[in-house]
Each structure stands twice: as structure tokens, then as C-alpha cells.
Length: 456
Image (cartoon, rainbow, N blue to C red; front, side, top):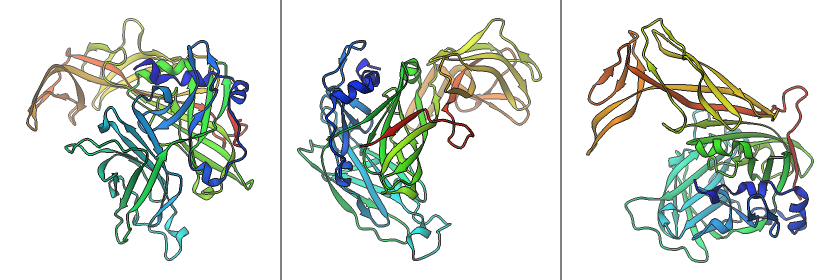
């Protein structure tokens, strides 16, 4: 990963006092203005000496997360300013990142909101799932060019998040120009919904709020709309861990106070160390929809990581008989990174397969961290030779998943038939998943927030 893709450390380490001095604080914005707050213009003239970068304008760009605008070479970000009704659904927070050097990397993301059936009137709650906001129910065109769904998080009511990219096997999209139009269609069973067209403009500037937790830990929140907030949690210790993981998810929980003084909740995804974890963000709970968030407190988040093959150290040992246990002769660490260690203690074999005993610890000094779980996976490395469609695949060193059969034998796929493993055959284990919690739930007795924010 290039250094310029993880520059959140630059803005994350700027002190709150310097951020305050460097930003022009506008008067409290109107609701219309809040809906277009997408770029963070923070510490424009403050040099961050340890990183050698000036923290300038930062932008939320789909597929890239929160990044400084100077690294978005050839990328233009567009947003929509208004909530748009699409049947019983509200489109909100539409943003489009146009990659002018590689148009097939264009990304569009929008969030939708749908109230529960019983809150809409005209009928009982739809327990059968009518109106289920499935990702393939939406179609999108940008300036007449069709885009396909590239991932979604959805539910029968409340919030959904959807992202789109250009359809393959068609000409690459032309440059969109100064503005662009996005047409969104939705097919819902037993309901006719007319497509809507939204005009997007270049992203506007706005204000973010940053809080420092420890000397190398901070969290920064940027309101996107009245109901959506994008955020980044930065901890220098975790940067190598996030860069190594193939997939990272950070689900955070907040207590909120609305503009009217009502207590509520918000939850959603944070970016971690400046690297976008997915396409979601922090969302006000449905009960506080359109009430505005005046302040919020971060209580906890659950971070989980998945690792690709060969991205972490692996350990190989000879397969045992059923009922036997293998204990490494010396310490075997499957993870030693970001303040976390995972030591393989032993591997046992029974009729259900291989069982792994590990010692998973956090050795850092941040008392907000609690290890949750570490999952180890065993594979057999060997030849894979088969035909997939029209492609002949041959790999003499493929990682082949081990499967336990009903009679206790272990097999792995190697071609037309599974290969049965015998005692003494090499088995390789590695860390596949890990997770930890930061902070404590607001429902835990005596818990305190780890950071508090007030939006002006």
C-alpha cells in the first residue's frame, strides 16, 4: 500500500487547538447546508512535522474513504444536496467519485432510509418482508451510463447503504463534466415506483470535529447530512495491522443528543487508520431521523479483521491420528502485530476435525482494548488441477481447505476428486480472523464514553 493512501495520521495527530485555529468556523448551518457537508477543510496551514505533510482539504470518496484531496489525482467527487423520495424510500447522502484516469473505477454510493410498515400507516407491519431493500432491487445510471451493484447493506426498514460501479463489457464512461445526473430506479413487489433523477455537484467544504484519546489515538467525525456522519479512528499502533488485513470492519456505537435535546443512539462503521473499512457510515437511529444530532459520545466499537493466505506467518506440522494432540516444540506466533499476539498452543484431532488451542492477547498499553476472539484455519498445501468454466487451473502450491467427513477422515479439494489426508501429511495453520472491542457498551454499569463531540 502506498504511503499517500494512509495519510490520515497527518490530520489525526494535529491537536484540537491547532485544528480550531486553522479552520474558519461558520455559524450553525441550515439543514440544507448540512446535506452537502462532504469535505473536511482542516488545519490548512498547519505542518505536521513527523509526517512531513500539510493537512489540507480532506474528502469522503467512495471506494477510498476519507483522503486528502491532493492525492486524488484525476478524481473528482460529486454529491447531491437534497433528500429525494423514491416511493416509500428516502435517498440521502448520494456521492460519486469519478476516476478520470480509469473510468471503470468510478464509484457511486448512496444511503436510503425506509420506515417500518407500521409507522407508515395504511396497514399492518409487513412480516413477510414486502419492501425488502435488496441490493439488486436498485438500478443506477449516471449521465445515461448503466452502473451495477457492487455491494450493499440492507434491512426491511431503517438504513441501507448501496454502492455501484460501471457495468463491464460496455464502453468506459465519458467524463461527466461540471455536474452529472444520477437516475435511480427501484423495483419493489406489489408497488409501482417511478425512477428519480438527482443532479450532483462538486463536493462542498465543511467542518469536522476531532478528539484525542491518547497521545497516538484520535477519532474524527464529519457530518455528511443531518442523519449521516462519516468518521475515522486513528491509532498509530494499529496501522500495520490494518494494512496487512485483507478485510477490516469497525462497528461503533454512540449515545446522541438531538437538536431538540432528546437522547438517542447512533451506530455504524468507522474508517480505521484512514483506510476505508467498507461503504457504510454512522447513522442516527430511525426514531431520531431528521431530528439532527447536536452532540454524541463514542462508547465502544467492535473491530474485526480477516487475513489473506500468506499475509501472516504460518505453521506446518504432520497430521496426527484421531485422538492425538500436537504441541509445538517452541513458541509459535501466528500474529505479533499492532499490540496483539496470537500463540498457537496445541492442535488436537477428533472425529469432528482439527481443534486449535490459542493464546490471544493484547500487549499494548491502551486499557480501552479487550481481545474478543482469534480464529485459526488449517489447510493442506499441494496441487490443484481442474477446469473452471473455460479456464484450466493448475497450481502446485495452492492452499486447499481441509474438510472433516462424517467418518472422521480429513479431505481437501485437489481436482476432480477430493484428496484424503493421511497421518503424517503436512498441515499448515494460520490466523484467519481476529476481533477486539474498544471501550464499553453504554448499557454496561459504570461505563464512560471514550470521546465526546459537539457539532456547531
